[in-house]
Figure: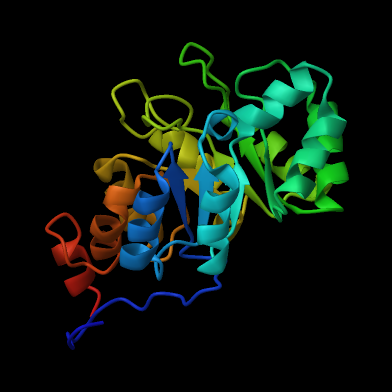
Length: 254
């Protein structure tokens, strides 16, 4: 840090499994990636190339290499996995991961109907080759999954070999964990936490108010995902109690 302030919450250091922040890259240029890494590299734990943007991204190999050179792993969004699976091209997906030398993969079923046993089988197969993040929740705002089902699916996916499970919210933060207004489904989150260890969950929380809510619930080192590049430094100040939304919250803990 650039100067000393007393009573600042302690952040975990990279590589970390708690206090984890996942970036959502929706199509940054190579120059933007270079700037993002230079400015925020200390705070970026992993980068998701959102949904299937990698299919149309120019200079994809070069982009991945910039992140990799900075020690930041990259993975393709779960929607791309679903696009391969629905077309019966899972083997092609495995070859794609190998071609780009990716060490992480996301398994999801937010856009397709996939029997949960089959989803867990994909996780089991992939986890033998790469580190798997599995996403739970639907991208359909009209589909409300009861808390017990979230818990059941999360536990089974962890048992199948997922490193962490991701709570679905999309890039807008208006489905899954959240109401269409962006409000957190508080009861859902609290019930999930009665059964699933918090360090095993990445909460997609693209909106500032959502990030504040999770930080106040679970502390500085909560795992958060779908964070826009421009929001990384603002989020880090929220984690450290250096923005109005969490300023008093952390001061009162010292």
